[in-house]
Image 1 (cartoon, rainbow, N blue to C red):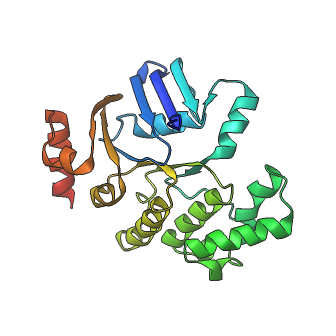
Image 2: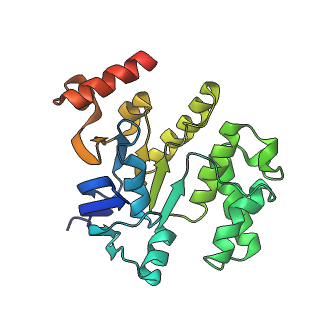
Amino acid sequence: MAAPPAVIMDGVNTSFGTNHVLRNVSLNVGQGERVVICGPSGSGKSTMIRCINGLERYQCGRITVDGIALTRDAASLKRIRRDVGMVFQSFNLFPHLTVLQNCVLAPMSVKGMKRAEAEALAMEFLGRVKIPEQAGKYPSQLSGGQQQRVAIARALCMQPRIMLFDEPTSALDPEMVREVLDTMVELAGSGMTMLCVTHEMGFARQVADRVIFMDGGEIVEEGAPDSLFAAPKTERLQRFLAQILRSH
């Protein structure tokens, strides 16, 4: 029997005042599927993935995560957030805590993990993102690329079933982008369900099972990266890809 989808979005609409940000968005993401979401600024990409873990509210439609209906009920939201990790554009690390302290905070406070167990887990994931030697440092002592890898390790410490990435390399200097993308490529190889908002088309080609192109709050096109990029069907996607090529 096939596993149920990791994420179901059915006719989701979100507005901020008079700004209709998401328009009837419907999407199924399979268990272990890697989905890259791209599109111009203001197309609703970040809002869409922020709705999946309740960081943004939706007014109409239905979202189900790992079989749990996402409602405004605090209990359902808590259950979903235990299984969904999020990595933001800005690293959102606590500046007054060391790398290790940043990583153990949620497992101890949310999951009730003992400190020794949480620290062992944190060191395992800091090793996985290749910065275990930075465990005793503060975020201000790290490069941007290192800080983002700490943010990834911190999210992994909750042992999520689904990872959301909201433009994780857009705040980085160009030379630091590669180290973060390499970390994400390795993570993708582990079979975890991933939804990633990014303009890094090389990453999409290497990692994504499916690419979704959004514009004006709608899903305009979707498909396997090679076919989608080689033969875009809509003028909107053609323009977007041409713009990406010019900027690189």
